[in-house]
Each structure stands twice: as C-alpha cells, then as structure tokens.
Image (cartoon, helix red, strand yellow):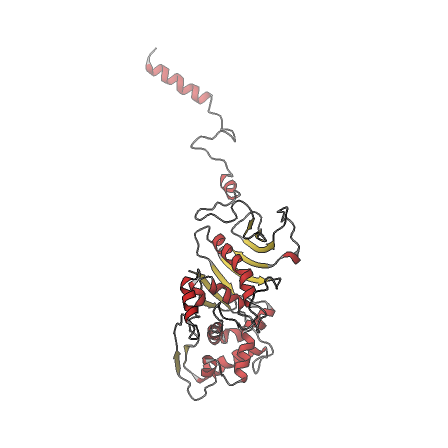
Length: 346
C-alpha cells in the first residue's frame, strides 16, 4: 500500500471521528476554563511585598496585658476597609465578639490610608502627663501609638506608602476667635482684614525642626529617639497666596467668617457650597496655620482637636497637603469646615 493511500485513509478517519471537546477538568495548553479569571479574583490576596503582621492571625499580642485585633469590613479583603483595636488580653484568646466597652483605642484604614485614631478608655497609666486642653495627651499617644505602628506596617503590604487623613477639630473655633481679636494670631486673617493693601503677595515658608524652648537634655533624647521626626514642627506654609483685587479680599473674608461661625454671608440664607468654594484658598491656608499650633510629642499642652495630628507626626508623619471638603458630614463642617490634613509616613 502506498504512502498516499495511507495518508488519505488517516484524513478520512479524522473527518469521520472529530476530536471530542475537553472536559472541565482536562485542559490542553490551548483551552482554558471559561470563568478562570473570575476564579482568580475570588482567591485571597497575597502579601506580594512585605508580610503583614496579621499574616497568621487577626490578633497579635504586644505586651502581656494587651493585644491588637484587626477587623476586616469587606469579607476576606485584607487591603479593604478595616479597623484596628487595642484590647485587654484574655485567657482563651477568643476575640470573635468584642464588647464595645472593652475597646481601649481604635484606628481605621482603607487600603494604604489611615484615619480616625481614637482613645476610648482613659486612665490606663498612673504615670501620665496631664494636659489642661484635652485631658491627657500622653495617654492618647501611649494607647494609639502601638496601633499606628502596626497599621502602618499592614498598610504597606502591597508596596504603597502609608498615608493618613487627619481631622482638624477646633479649626472653626480658632478662626472665629482670631476674627474676634481683629486677626491676632493669624497671618492670613491679618491680610484679609487689611483694607489698605488690596494687592498683597504674602509668602512665608520656614521650617523649624525643634522648638526654641527645648533643653539640652531634650535634644540629646531626640537624637536617640526611635521617631526623630516626632520633635519637628509643622512647616509654616500658612499665608501663601495673592490678593489681586479688593473684591477678592472681601469675598474671601466673608466666606471665611461664614464657614467659621456658621452664619450665612450677607444676601445668603445658608452656608452652602458656594461659600466653601469662595473661601477655599484662604481656608486651606488657615488650616496650615492651625496645624502649626500642634506641639511636639514631648510637650505637655496640646490644643483640643490636634491630638491626632500630634500622633501621626510623632510616628514620622509629614504634613503634605490640606484636603478641602475631605469630610462633609454636618458635624465636621462645623468643626473644621470639612478640611483634613494629609500626611505621608517617611
């Protein structure tokens, strides 16, 4: 039988008996399951860069008496919305149901952004420095500091730089007080209240790493501190803008006054989005000034509302921007006009 006859017979057999379609469990290099991509999306996310401190358990001990527990708010998505809790350690190590009264401190996160550091229970230590403005700053730092350290590490598992969005509670009250004192205490308000100089370029950018009142012992402790940036001051970027027209000065001043006091501008019935838009430039510069009031972590007195900022700066946080209307809840609009500070941990 010739080769041509054999080839023709094989070709006829292939046409008569086509190759069966592969089953769902038998894949060739050319065939893939229809829903393979969806199946991959359902797999738990892996730590591709740095291992998470919660890789083995959602609860890690930090001392013999306290643990940090991580709550995931989006199923098993370890990089979604989550909450870190400082809790007292219990014997059976079961933290499936956590009573709210047992939470000592908490911190929230979404992806690489941290926010909402809060102290729930005070009087944790008898060796704490009293703070006339906000009760106990050192107690707040001692409770929330370990939470922040762990949360920063957990927020960088995908290689992104941890950030923080910080509330500026008390900003409206501070601006209102400065307005009552004819701008005293604020370079921005001094410019806005100055009717004789409509064309002003006011730019002051200075950086002070330490306060003049620091003693030699304090400075020596700074050099050996694990968080050297905790002693630095917020960069002074308070008043940096141009008022080209007298009408600009009046518009911004009226908007700032309305945001701070909650009283609508002349000719308006509410403090609406137009007011916040017209006062944006001046208000964000006022927020920079307000951040300058935050003390270093080793100081005793802190204005009410700046505790969270002190916490982030004490853990190598650097203020990079003021986010206008970052939080538009009604209560926070009355507290800070919706502005929050963005920090990067470096």
